[in-house]
Length: 278
Image (cartoon, rainbow, N blue to C red):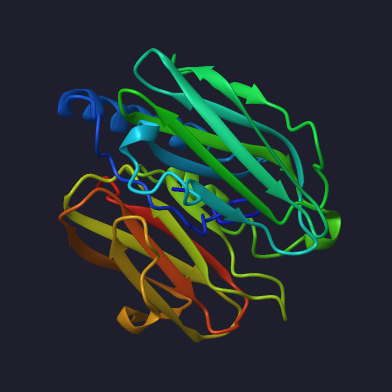
């Protein structure tokens, strides 16, 4: 799961990727899914990872509209974060193309690099602005199609310290989730916003989404689920009373599963996991 940004960040997703065109054999993609889940889970508890993303890396020629922005956008609340580097890894051999764009209040910088798909993290350091970053867009292309994992390495400003941010850190480390675990805070008082996360590696089928919430006082949280990589509409939300926990069975017929949580402006902590092992 992409963790909420920052630091245990959920991914706010803006992508239009599908494993189409020159796809790899199904067995290879299944192996890639297993690997990327393990890669993501291995980063649980790392204090230097302020955001991450699972990306279905497909050939450039297989995209429906190559001129449209692609990839995953990670949103960081103002005043932004310091980005030290991106750690990029992918599965299957060969080489993948990694592209990124980081944006601060008054500037942006885009670049990229070729990385070997040897299942090892490769560090890519931005050469431009790295302070006060509020948006980081990352994308990976590969032929044949596979899965890539990108971790954003950096630090939050001291002013962004949040008493709820690490509330579920120990709990996240205990869970055995097929998608890793996303957790974090809804935001500081007066700066609360909905959080969204997509696991693009979830195959079609029956899934169970686990949501836990902690807070100083009770309030409703809207939980919305959708298949694929587009964040769900709030109109489809189910209500969870925070503090509390609930599981949501959900069936998909396409790759990917997305979750949005809206605390309606109330501060607190959340945890999201998909297909937690008993």
